[in-house]
Length: 232
Image (tube, rainbow, N blue to C red; front, side):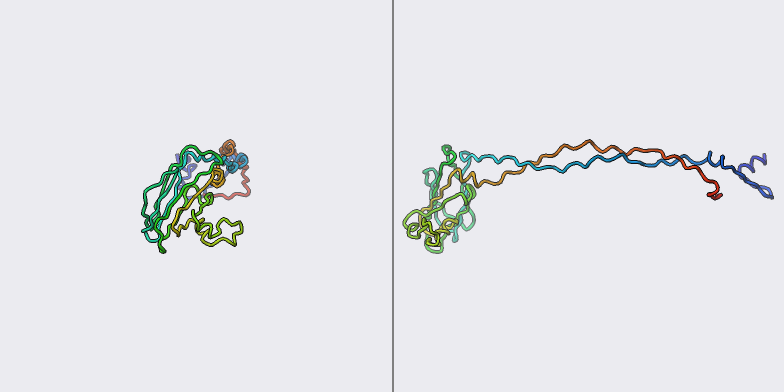
């Protein structure tokens, strides 16, 4: 039984123990080869999304309302509005923006003009009214002051240098003089000044998904006993 204990590595008796191996034995007992990871080719990257502009919808003026706001410098300014031939009661403004909205009816078509009026009742110097357009936008409106002042200021003169500075103030929405202000626009003008169409995002097709990595076994190298060390 001592023979088996020696072969198993138990050296329990005084003396020299010989340990011998051959290359064939080492080759046979080497570990299983380590797999080498190889990746399949990756297809071309997914193209970036492309933008396509959706056509701008044509505004239907018949379904819209006139919207604007007014404020006064002192909070004691009195005004009246006239829309579709209907004049409102007198309204006292505040120093904060007051919003107004009016249905313009159902009879307007492309190219038709529509107009409404704002009357400043009680100007006395420090009282001024400020108009802010919401719809239609200010750039599509033609604003004028009815009466002799507009003519006296040369506001309709083709030579802008001959026009009184008050003409520009009125067109910008400052109503600083007693009287009725006419605001006029056409459907064509409103159509031309609507916002740029919102881009619609369209995506190019995505190619097939990238294949999962595959494993390939690399052949085990043949051990070279002459270049190895004995280790225990």
